[in-house]
Image 1 (tube, helix red, strand yellow):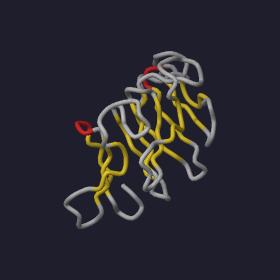
Image 2: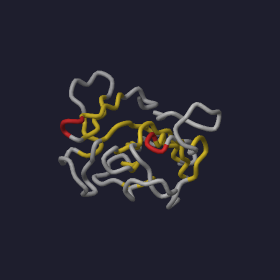
Image 3: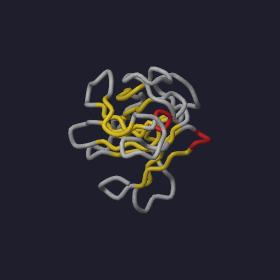
Image 4: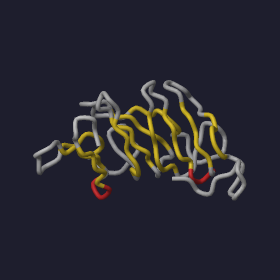
Length: 147
């Protein structure tokens, strides 16, 4: 949900995110909409979205292990976290899920496959682990497939 009350919806079958303003019955494509793929104008298995104050849409893309940012009006994404394939190092993630972006543009990602939450500061080429990352488990320093 945007601060202006607009509803943002992932349409998985069309690989796009649509914005529905109050009173609208037809949404506007704000990200993707060009089929599945690797092209900067396409999405690959979008999972979760976050909308910031500037109406930029952040999307966790399960299929590419990345978070993409779509500035309002943009036709192509900017990769702001991951995008380097699956892995355990600080430049890679596995099966990413929920995302939150703070007012400074720092992206927080639930890296489900690595049982950790990562922080990616604006412009960073690698993230840092802020919670978990110590294997799957029940201990206080472990997570169990976070969303």
